[in-house]
Length: 163
Image 1 (cartoon, rainbow, N blue to C red):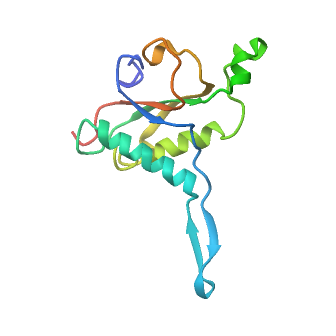
Image 2 (cartoon, rainbow, N blue to C red):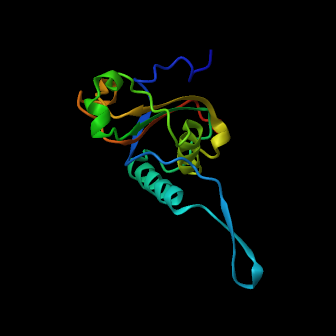
């Protein structure tokens, strides 16, 4: 068993939070610019979310250099529940978010935001625990209150490879 695998996820690592409905990493788009040149770009919604995540990482960052060892990533994407969903007793207990964006794209957006800041390359992420939920009471995220929509992610690091 590795050092990271033996950690209890709630006792180790740093939690980050990016407020607002989660956004998945969108595919790069292409358009034709002046003189027929093809230009590639990331859609604005994805780029804005990634910048918000980078700001949060820089604000919470505990050291100046990215981690070089293995990383365990825990991602909880919380989506704003509609008033009708909260009132509907049949659906209120079903907390799973089964709509777009896809969970893997939300995780990709988190991993891309952490490149060069939390870890050298997202290839270092060897374990991922991820889920999508509608907003409700989540005591494991802190106070037992309705959590804000957004992406909560925890980074648990193993021993650095350069030390």
